[in-house]
Amino acid sequence: MAAELKELKKLADGSPSPQNNKRAEEVLLAFKEAICDFTTLPPNNTKTAQSQKERTLAMQGYETACVLAAKNILTVDSALERHAQLLQPYYFDYRAELGDSSKRGEILALELLSLLVGKKLGDFYSLMERIPLKERSDKYINYVVELEKNLMEGNYNQLLKTRQKSPSTLYKALLNKLESTVQDEIASCIEQSYPSISLRVEYILYIDTDSINNM
Image 1 (spheres, rainbow, N blue to C red):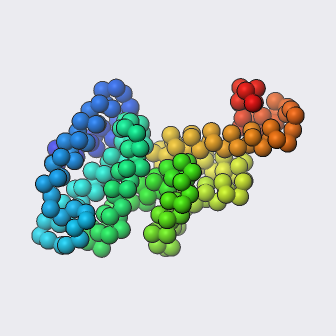
Image 2 (tube, rainbow, N blue to C red; image 1 turned 120 degrees about the vertical axis):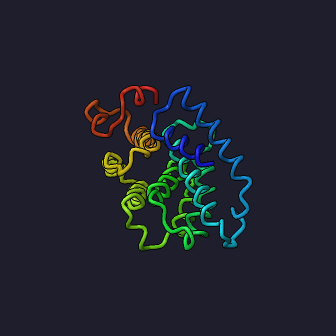
């Protein structure tokens, strides 16, 4: 168990490659098979002599899986969303027993960003409701809240500026997707309002010429 978790963390510190990606899937599977022997994981809420140790190990494994997915080392479909969901009992239901992980704010914000980029706003707001108000000032969570505010207000220019101030490198791939979505929204608005635009306007709005020419 400890060996699998240690290797997962080492892989999470690396970069995507066919070898690393394949190994990450193998080690994560072995980790999940190992924790099947644990008796204190969800939906069990009983505290025992082993519950804190077992739940902490499981939480760290799922956190690492989220990091692997965010860095495109774990490439299975919906890997980030699935492992973020698996983390929620540890972050909320077991919080009094386990305390706060050092990665809690960063991973919660990662899940929020994934939901925002995926346009799953109902799930986004449901997760926000579970996060205490005092915790929303966390630099990671507050960053995603600002992105959501700009997106809902249609303040795309400010959103793209905020995108450049990411507090975590884990958000890079999702922010690239968000930027692409915003560019599509801007291009759609322009298409409906103007028969043509200048190259200067394309530059200001962060839109590449190919996107405009293909409209």
